[in-house]
Amino acid sequence: MDGWPFWLVVIALYVSVMGRSHATYWIGRAVAAGARLETERRVGPAWWLRLLDKMDARSRTPKAQRGSELVHRWGPVGVAVTYPVAGLSTAVLAAAGILKMPYLRFTAASLVGSALWTALWATVGLGAFWAATSSWWGAGGLVVLVAAIVGFVVVRRRNAGVPDDAAPDDITAQDVAGRSTALP
Image 1: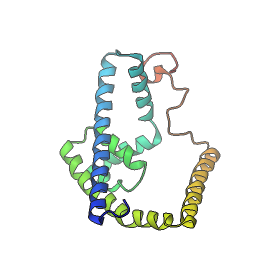
Image 2: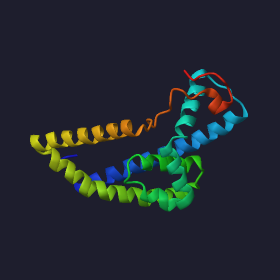
Image 3: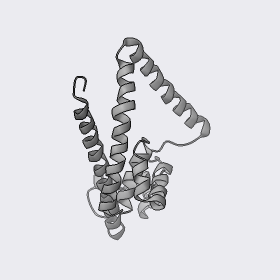
Image 4: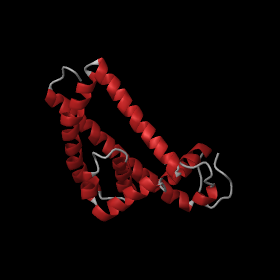
């Protein structure tokens, strides 16, 4: 994006975050519809059933639960203000779809949230990134910073005994669909 006019960068950022947010919302709606169908009847290819089981298991993670609680409590305002918070924003966008937030309300919230995200990234975010990567020292410092953050998170999770947000291997199909076989 170096050499692009600033207004074009802003538009590209805005369009990309709008696309991501609406795709995540509709994936949430599809998961909700699939879950509803799967509670009525459990049919489909094995890969589909495994995918639904994994999505159901991920919807029970603490991050997903926080996203659902935020959508229930704050509605569109909660959706809009979480855009700058990586990870939580994805959980909230998916929760909005799963909870069937009316699409016009979601769109209004995403217009505001995307504008907020774009304003932050088009100014502070990209400015800091370009400044950090404009020299070898800056790029090296950025790599060290990212490695330190990743290391901090890994050590913190290990010391706290907090499991990863990914679906645990020991979840059984009985937990999700009333069967007693372990998931592959």
